[in-house]
Length: 289
Length: 233
Image (cartoon, rainbow over all chains, first blue to last red; front, top):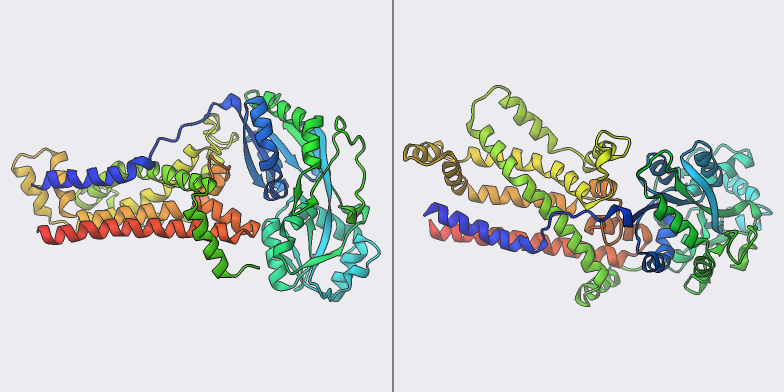
């Protein structure tokens, strides 16, 4: 009988797939918090270390969406997330000024470093400043890989070229349009220079043939800020959750955890919230990390 | 850089030791893709049957449209639905962006064209007399449809596998619509993309092996049914 056999097949197939199937249930939105952040905080493992404590303490579930700073701010502006944790002070200020965010709160900092091939063909390691380092790369036409993705690191890099009075273009300057990790991999494969945040670099250095060729200039300072998306603009946004996260991450507890987070024995970030145990945001001493 | 060998070895170790994060990601992949295909099957196959057997205006155009949609890049589906589901978009009030439901929607949009276009071809292979005979013998349309489906069951199984294979392996739409949130919307393909970008190649390879094992299992299932069919008829 055709039909009974068909039903048998259907039954077998259904049983095979059933354990995996469930109508995607949506979680309670008042207890869910959406955090748009940069790949540097997520890929370095910091948030996975920090957030479980916050979740246990407050009962919130934090959904982390890791993208570039530009896209994270866009998600905040569109009201698709509740809070953003990014690193591009100028763009953050603009975000607050136009009413998209409530207030920029300082969280922590690290710094950018210029990494490159171990034999350092552009002699970047003898540079006197960050600007000088980039000038040397441009002059020697050594390959430089740019994030090219409107991330915080990309914004920083472009502002450095501007300060150096150089319009980066030509065969040697390559825009990857990828995240930090991918760009470090590409730089390693192509023996190229690139600008990276120290956090991602520390997580990567053991896997990479590159080395730090320049560091320590205060101009390479990399501060992170957290901003709640403006509830006046989006009334049903989880602003209570956003405030709770900001309060916790800037509390002595949260700041202590940031300050003690290490990867392969190196500290990644220095806490810098006003309420934390480090009162002043100051430029890092570079190699001191 | 790690060699391919050690990455593969690590992958097998991770799978064997039941790394809970890894298995969680696998579970999300299966749940989302299975939900998507179960939602897509009934309307798609019905439409495919009508396109193969019905005669109505616009039929040829519809066939062309669904065949064209086969080449739709997943990331375009993701971007389009992202704009629709974003708070600024027409369906923003549903607050579906960055949920598993959004991923299901994206995958439905990806697998419906496969089910319709390839299902249409599968139904065309059926002898039209099967439908007519069943109807003449007094079968209801639904029952007659089931008879025809039984006639072309091997073709239909292949269509289901192709559709399931596409959505379980696609990364573009899931990444944009789900946001790659750990323990919630991170599935096998987005996890592979993430682990690769982090340089954690062994995790990436492990997840790739899981996908291959799944494909192997599904193909085995198909062959099992095909084998049965050959001996039974």
